[in-house]
Length: 123
Image (cartoon, rainbow, N blue to C red):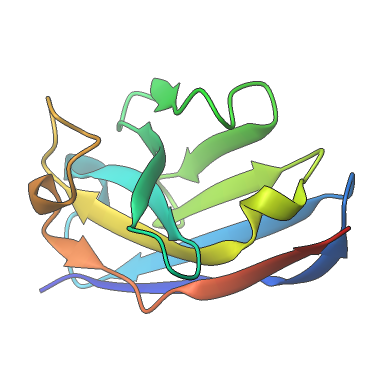
């Protein structure tokens, strides 16, 4: 059983930056693709970005060039660096893990989820 714990959320002004972390335990971290999803109030959870064990990543168009995902396999941790934040980035951000090779936009592809961390961007 893999446990994921996010941290680093908070309140930031538009144009600012924030960094999230997701620490994994209880599994073989390197065997999992790690993703970030987010859910804004009144909206469905949506895919943000994913990274695989070899470091390759793929981002949603809405965050491309602003958000960067990275992972430290030695620390079993994945990071999400968010720059040029916009009010529409306000959401609860969730870390997810799974043996994902295709369909990475789809939540059911992921086996494990964190509890989420709130990110609020003020205008």
